[in-house]
Amino acid sequence: MRAAATWAIITTRVSKERRGLLIAACACGLVAYLQRYDDASARLSGCLLFAALAGVVAALLQRGAGRFRQIELCEQSAPLYGRELARAIAVVPFTVVTIALAAYWSVAQAYSHVRTEEVLLSAFGAYAGALVALPAAVRKGAARALYVVAACAVPLLCFLTSEKAPVLLPCLLCTLFGFVALRQYGEALARYDPL
Amino acid sequence: MALLEMREAAFRRGGQSIVQPITLALDEGAQFAFACADERAAALAALMAAGLLAPTSGCVFVAAFDPRIQPVQVKRVAGYVPHEALPGDFDSFTQYIEFRAALWGLPRAQSIVRARALLAHLDGVHEAFAHPLVGALLAEPRLLVLDRPQAAYAAQIRTVARGCAIFSTHASARDAERFAEVAVPA
Image 1 (cartoon, rainbow over the protein chains, first blue to last red):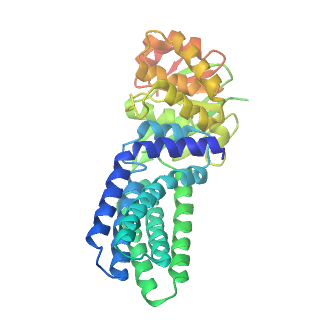
Image 2 (image 1 turned 90 degrees about the vertical axis):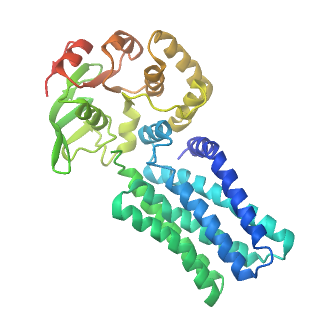
Image 3 (image 1 turned 180 degrees about the vertical axis):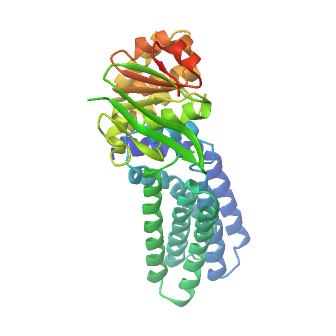
């Protein structure tokens, strides 16, 4: 895929999400402030919950919600493969999650020491949750609900695994889930039925 | 070789036949106004002809490419113009053209100049139709698919889409006849 096409999709969609970015950043910053005296485990769960939620909502709004119909039609009729489109669109919830995480950990850092593992785990969990939510936007009914449940379950799984196993295991699990979800999203876009 | 070939292409949803089987062949540079049973059928027939919607039975070929397995090649050949006015996702016409130019890999500055020149030919055409039409013509498609275009704009469409094969769908035979000489009732 041409870099110009990827960049155009990302910048156009992210510029439409400015309000969402602000809300995600404010919400996560507020949660971090409220959790300023909590222990590391509570902080991680709070950050994962809110950042993943922001990512899941951003992912669900990317397609089929009737928000960007003109952009969707342009993308759909452009000579791009589904996987290329999927990668470019995935950057939008990634951006929302990144902003949310940055807000959370910036505020948390002001009150206590933040370990690198916590940041890593929250990033992997929230990114994977957002990626798993992406295919839900192009599905309906039970399949859509299943993807949303899976998207919420991935950060939870990441958190639970991090309690029992070394940090690498939940990170690997999240990478695997995110990769499979992105592939499925690309395939769904390739055979996208706009009805 | 036909630029657009539809062989018994039909669309069903939930056991209900929405688009009756369509069989036609459209040559390079030709024009065809196709009359469908109703507005929904016309919208879906246009999407099928542009390779954006797979028929549930039969097949569609655009410049001998099969949209099911060669969607990118089909989208390089066909340009699609929707019927309904879409909400303005772009702040300006220039931004819309820049976005389309980036997606099709066209030079930005040249695309804007070309778009403005095309728009100048569409004087009197409502921008809700003119902008998507200019956008579709930007990549110089060989086939232009129009979903229920207004007959009043037929002359201007032919002017800006000179050299292009034009396939339009209409909600009734009367609309199709008004748009072009050739009309085939569904």
